[in-house]
Length: 311
Image 1 (cartoon, rainbow, N blue to C red):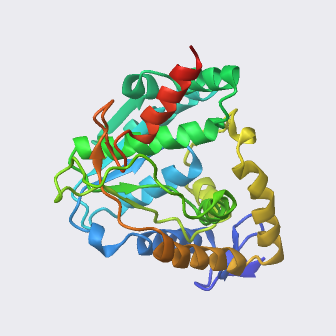
Image 2: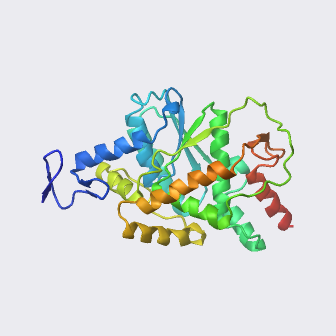
Image 3: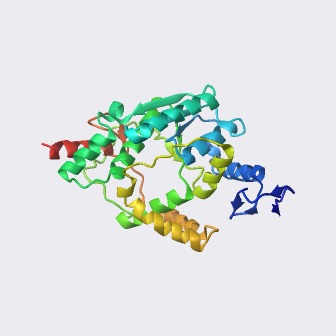
């Protein structure tokens, strides 16, 4: 038994926060919510937000805080997007997530759609084709491209300029390391010099309020708040390169519970981003008409390669 900074007694089953010491459940909740709110850029205020909800702990924690503090953040509206990859093991639990959202977030608009509706193929279909012809894509590479493309275009369709993602400190660190492994600067091929999109067009911006918060803290937050999450992991996750980087990140966390190693990696990422990523023109995809940084969007490039190789 110990004492919280507020004076309350902290029982052994109350959360221990490695970033700021022992806290009672109430203070812990306040601490996490304040960190999430601090992660919302001020430029978002006054604008509607699209929140991508997978049913996992991170996206549901983000939605809960944004919804609770929408008045303080001056967010006029929040729209939830649930993208169904059509993986049978996960689909049932995702339906439970939708029911939870309807019960606990009254009046919140929910866009529920799937890959087949948006692209003509489910993720299992694309993975099966890719595996059969040995084209070389990992399931996560396919899914990531399609998910990003879908979120951007759904935001555009609903006139929303900001997309909120439940990306944690570990996620951002893993992405940074993956970019280094794959090569930071990649040349865009077959790109013409002029865009076919109006020069005043604004691409939706992604925001990541959890990017400096450890997933361990989010897990504790979800547990205290008793928010139900999808328990089954994606069956394709073990095939990703990210899954091989995750143990390394865990070892860094065990060496430094304060998270300095992970924060240092993020600092490096921001420096490299400023040095290597030029302004990119925008196009309307020649195949599906979705907005992209190339004349053929990433999703259509994958589909075209799969269709050609499958013949």
